[in-house]
Amino acid sequence: MAFNDLLLKALNKEKTERPPVWLMRQAGRYMPEYMEVRKKVSFLELCKTPELACAVTLQPVDILGADAAILFSDILIPIEPIGVNLSFNPAPVISNPVRTMEDVNRLNHFNPESDAPFVYKTIDLLVKKLNVPLIGFSGAPFTLACYMTEGAGSKSFLEIRKMMLNTPDVFHSLMKKLTEDTIKYLQNQVKHGCAAIQMFDTWAGILPPAEYKEMVFPYVKEISESISAPFIYFAKDGSAYFDTIKELNCAGIGIDWKISLKEANVMLGSKFSLQGNLDPAILFSNKASIKKYAETAINEGKLCPGHIFNLGHGIMPATPVENVKYLIDVVKGLA
Image 1 (cartoon, helix red, strand yellow):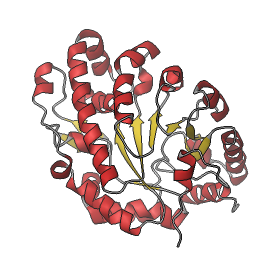
Image 2 (cartoon, rainbow, N blue to C red):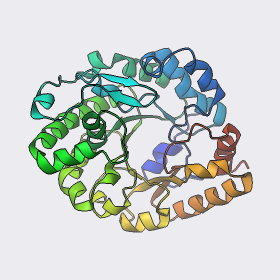
Image 3 (tube, rainbow, N blue to C red):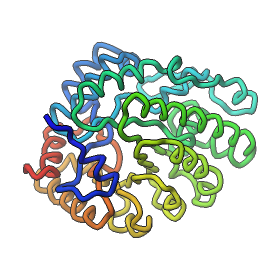
């Protein structure tokens, strides 16, 4: 079967007959085939077992027809080997949060091949099996720092806000460390065969725009300019920062469902391939509604330099799998 390079063409702003489609969290709990694998191992064991991580990465490509695979892993995987005590219960829990300069200084240096060999073994297995591009990924330094300082998930992430306001030297030391580690982590993913990279900044949206621009964005820019493969940056709830984000020179920007693709394209200077932006809740609707909203996104995407059809965030666990399949078929012109 010929290699499906629609994603790479869209990221390169080449004309495509239709938008490529893949979905954030496309390998996950909504799929019975995923749950069959997951019930045998813990989440961390699944991430760290290349054969199993490879199998679940392939499922949405083989079963649903996605135009790209995204490496099955977790954004927090690279922080464990640097000295962070990480567990999932089922949400992430960190028993030794990082809040002082002493905490930052005790963190180890990250060595990709020795600290995360299972990630690269998974990539090696996947590139031999796939006929679509493999997307590698990481969390952005700020989002990683949110978890590392809080010690768990949160809606406000007050610990990182306090650090930024009261001990900015500690914040910048942590961000510099995480930026260096993220660059090494992602460069090695490309070296092993990932055709594109996405960086998730899930919690960037908690910040005022001026704080984001001054204290977070320089690290995003440094990483984006250090990766040789096409790079997609996704800051959830990030439309307030588009005036800053448009200074990036990367291939793509992920868009959540809280702004239209048409508006986002204008705000970003019609400079990027845009990825998104269907509201994940639409997948709990009926087929007519799914098709209507999908076609709206497809039509707005035609106004952009490039468009990759995706959700505005990840698929929710209870999503009916038949609706996900139908959505992909709609985008591919099969329904």
